[in-house]
Image 1 (cartoon, helix red, strand yellow):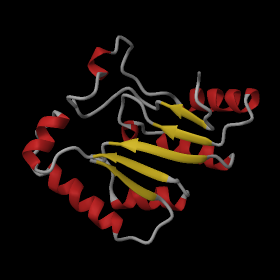
Image 2 (image 1 turned 180 degrees about the horizontal axis):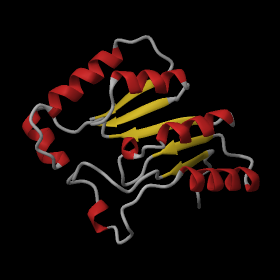
Image 3 (image 1 turned 90 degrees about the vertical axis):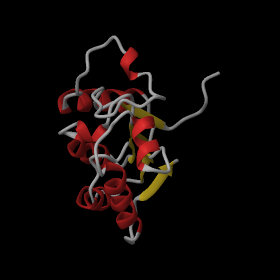
Image 4 (image 1 turned 135 degrees about the vertical axis):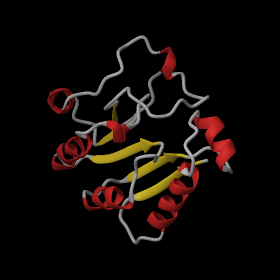
Amino acid sequence: MIPDSKEIRFEPTTKCNYNCVICPREKLTRKQDTMSLEDFKFLFDKVRKERKEYNTVTFSGFGEPFLDPSLFDKIRCARKKNFEVLILTNASLLTKEKFLELDRMKVKSVRISFYGYSPEVYSSIHGINQKGLFDRIKDTLTEISDIKKYTKLILTL
């Protein structure tokens, strides 16, 4: 039985800047690509026309949503139609400024996959070895958490 859901999930891109040990993305046989804004609008409007029960769009999938240059336009499109918007991200490309823009657009939540309690563990789990990345993301998330905001910041640890 399919669970009752009012959520449509879109994978804006299959591209990712991480190589997480828990992600099967490398097993994908489809091309790593980004969904065009036109394709998103077409599919979004088609689902809306055929199924009236949906009220939420989630941007998630095997890719990192912030690698999609048209992500904010896709969010604006969904918000104009009064859909709630949720985002799942590794936060590597999230900045305070981007978060504030998401908050201005009334994105309901940004869920962060942040696995690891130290730079070494974080690097081994996320499959990326970039000096200072762990601390930069931690500092950004701390700064964002201090802001009075509409958008919820949810950490998956």
